[in-house]
Amino acid sequence: MIATEEQRRILYLQAMDIPLYVSRADCPGALPTTRVPLPQSPTPADTTPATRVTDTPAPGDRALGSRLAEMADVAKREDSATAAAITVATTAESTSTRTTSTTEAVRFSLVLFRAGRWLWLEETPDGTLASDQVQLVAAMAAALDNTVASAKVKPVTSQFKWPPHNNAQFDLGDEAARAGLEAFLQRHVDDSGCSGLIVLGEAAGLRLGEAALSVPVLARTLGTRDMIMQPTLKKQVWSDLKPLVGGL
Image (cartoon, rainbow, N blue to C red):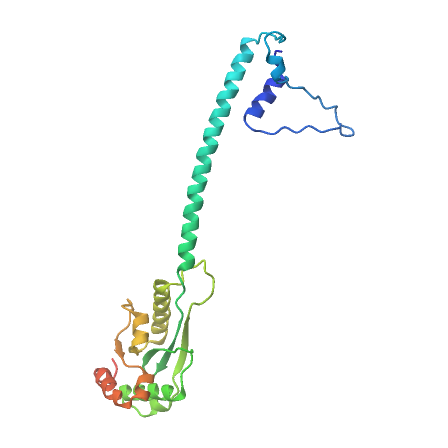
């Protein structure tokens, strides 16, 4: 049987795996749907030469069948390539997600003092400082400024807590923490017009690292907690801070 133009169109769409839908009944007020039957596929019994009566396919039908087979083969190859690309992309994304999720956020808290003409930075495990620690910072600031009155002024404190949020989609690792701390300190240095920044304790020094701060003086010494627990360390602290007496 020679395929009509509409049947050829339907066969093309089937070869491209494009589904065709036809309403079971005509919609009210709509034109009647024209349902075109497709050429019936031959059954095994019909292929017997003794009983098979066939129409000789026209050249156009043979070309159509060859073209449809070629299109189906191309579609299969493209589907395979697309599936492989999707698999690679999915694997890469999954690996990236696993790498990000395994990078745990560092957690710490620092307190920044403004005492006298100096800023003082110290790490606090629980985010707070004991009153004797605050008094010790005030006393050191008074010694640097050569004034007893400064020791009676309670230092103004600001807290830097990391991470600032719990959104795992953002980088919360060491480098991001150091950059955030550097920006926090630089802002306070610029706003305060201080004589310099004094880092108290090894923990705070490690958090700051080799920060590129624009600050008149950056000094490092022992922490207040260490000095309170072991008063003999105050001699070492005074040796570290003595060059700063009088400010800049």
